[in-house]
Length: 264
Image (tube, rainbow, N blue to C red; front, side, top):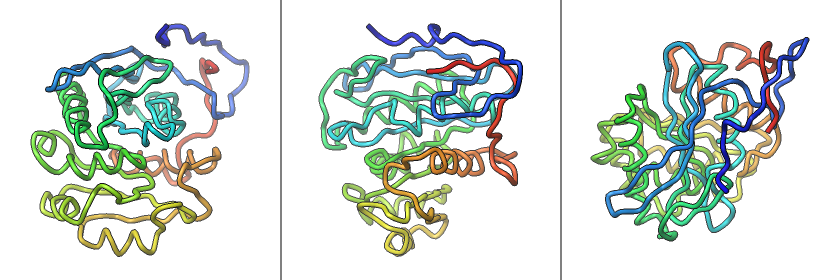
């Protein structure tokens, strides 16, 4: 059975709540589906601010599904739990082809990042058709490969503002793709864990030097999977700084919430 976001039960605590890994803040959440150009039906979730304008839209691309990556990978789950309420940011999460999560299973099979081009295009097209503004790709690990390979070429390039990359391995994405990003002129932020298993900050700075507008930021102490609330919160702060005009603020996003909360 597919997870229903309406099943979340919110309550009003008497005092401010510490925002923890399982804390869910208010948002308008809905299960969504969209179809790729080659006919695959993909499943996902869209989380929108309860009220007010949408400051930015994140189109998230998850880690490698053959190694446990899916739309619920923890940084993206926490983004959907928090960012609509804390920053007015819409978060679109979805399973690429052949990927399963509690939300359901997207049609198709894993295609090594090749057929997934249609998945990226379909997700962006969905965001455009829904009228979601200020659209950014956010890729993590395998998702960074998809963002780099397909985000700076049409039909995606003209529909997104830029991209934020988390733990890019640069396995499938090549210098050709980096040069396409350079030619696009679109912003590219690259968050690289100090102890990444695949690409660490010094090497990343060298590889991404092909993209003059790229901002490469090494994160001390972090690992490829951004395990630990300290690192997940830092990632969300950096994303909000990149994609919204107001940013996360000098002290980062709030770590406490006064209002209704649920626990996932």
